[in-house]
Amino acid sequence: MLRRKSSEELSNLSRNSSAGSSSDMLRSTSLVNLITGKEGPLEDDDAFTRLKSQKDTVLLLVDGVRFLLKRKTLLSHPETMLGGMFGENMERFTKENGDGEFKIDSVSPEIFRAILGYYVNGEIKVPYDLNMYEIKEACDFFLIPFNTTTVVSENLSAFMNELSNDGSRRKFESFLQTDIVPGMAEAAMKGERECHIVCLKDDDIVDWDPEYPPAVGEDRLSVVKNNEISRFLKYIENREVAKTVLQEKGLKKIRLGIEGFPTHKDKVKVTQVKPRGGIQVTYFYVQRPFIVMSWEKEEHRSRHVDFANVSTSCQSHRSVNSDETVNLPPQNLNAVDEIELVEQRDQEI
Image 1 (cartoon, rainbow, N blue to C red):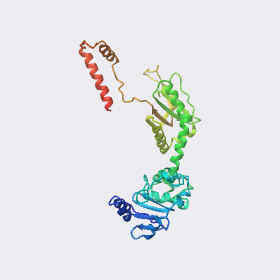
Image 2 (tube, rainbow, N blue to C red):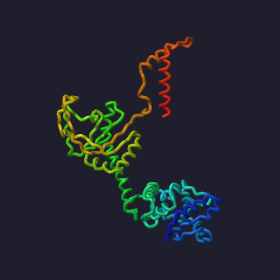
Image 3 (cartoon, helix red, strand yellow):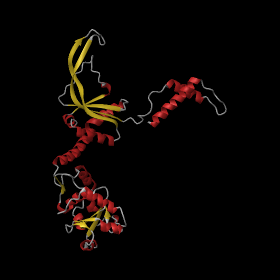
Image 4 (cartoon, rainbow, N blue to C red):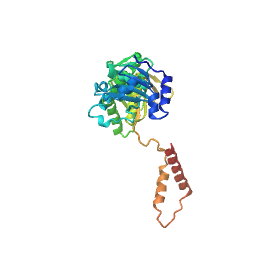
């Protein structure tokens, strides 16, 4: 049975692999021999030299640790990246280094050893102290299914969490196309550059008094009624996944959370002060998920420009010919300087 290396041992392997020539590194690095089941240093290992020279073996180098296994072990799963690398049609694209090794990047030796379990016995056994997120990333990289059939984990909570992340991403992308994008498009066609969407339940009834509506910015507010979206976004982890998806699609100023939303009138009271004819209306609020996002491109440009001064300055500049000079009034020069400083400061931001 293979023994799991400690972090100190792996650190020593990494230091050894970065020093000396390739032949010295070969002799000073440990070997995980999946053919014989042996693991240890390469010194005086005649079996390693003999097996390495055989055409049906493959030597993989992962961060200073070598994995020796039979080629047919990888070819048993041709749908994966490693199975394709050593297939008949891909051999000409897979190049080994001077020591007859194939280097594998983007994964640690411990994670890779767990991944190879899929090729050896059909399942990836994950000890409790291995990072499940790294296992998931490695499965995606090597094109190995990440599910209950291929992964056996001692940390069931971490395993279920990664499965939920996969499921929530697919679910939110579905919600995005069917329910969220139409609300964004409606705001965009009004000339807006941002959108505020509130996700209500199907049985929520919105009954606003047309004479005394709540001050919620209803002109920029979009309401989506969908029990599944409302339930989906109540979890913090799902909102984090949704935010990542929106960021990948180029949106900005993204905020997701739970907020109070007014549904119907709760109280009507007559007051001495008369901001609204002496009537004060209180609404009943329910806590529902919301999404705020923006697609504004030039968000850092100044919005506080004196267009009267800009117009005067531009007219003065346009009246200048190539052979004459015009002296602008002091206030116009100051206005031009101020605008230039504002734009320069915005660019620095």
